[in-house]
Length: 219
Image 1 (cartoon, rainbow, N blue to C red):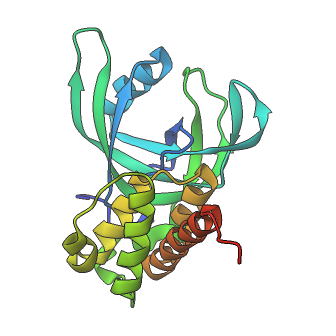
Image 2: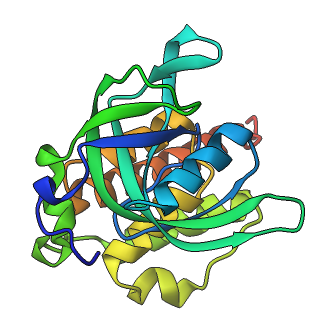
Image 3: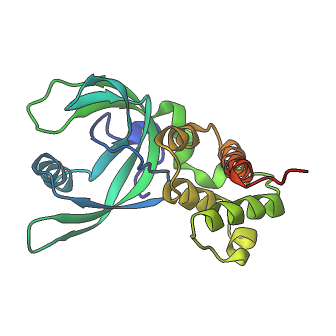
């Protein structure tokens, strides 16, 4: 992302959009439909500034209207924006860098704002420095195919075997219907290698559950 080379280049206070089941990863694109007044206000404000929003999930605890936030989220920059005739915003967030969620600020804005610590995830800003994981493509493709078949979803077999690892892992992490806790674990994976391994394991665990559900013959 232009202009962001180091953690200190990013804003230290960011608005956050808590949304369970939706994670953003560096380099990934997340389309969002914004209609709640407080988040329309948030988009208005960030469009007038650096266009950065922090996507983050919640965890148990806190008030119903203000649940506790998970420890890690990902900052994204609004890279496309459109307004509908009924006042909704259609935006795309492109992932920039993960952050550790720090102190929540007492603010007058209707949306929440936190201090974001990007230092731990500064490597997200230099994806070309990350080593491609040593992924067993055939094992991965088998697990992915079983997972998708179970949900009547589809992906081209050649894509699973030949697509560049990082965008493939990113798109699957963001797009597949994993549980929020599973998506959080993938988000927090220390490296691309760790995320690819965790993704493969989740796909294989799902396949094992499928086997357990199948009827067994009785001798």
